[in-house]
Image (cartoon, rainbow, N blue to C red; front, side, top):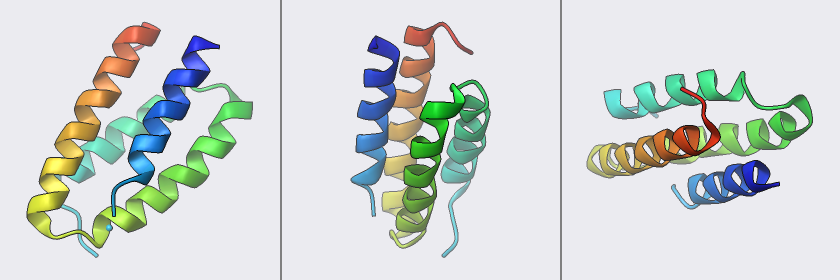
Length: 88
């Protein structure tokens, strides 16, 4: 239950960002997130993937400097969540 809550919390953060071209920090974040999704149980992954795709679109609409800042923050949260879940 705690894992699901963490995933839902992270997804909620992702939905607060607004996204054409992505800066390298965002490209890395989404690559890392793709890897993370491979380790999420299928029943949870479906919902998360829908939010994930919306987040990609929203991020690409942001100015480059905001993309960089937002993706760096999201990457740090992803790392913390993976550490909490014991996944690397």
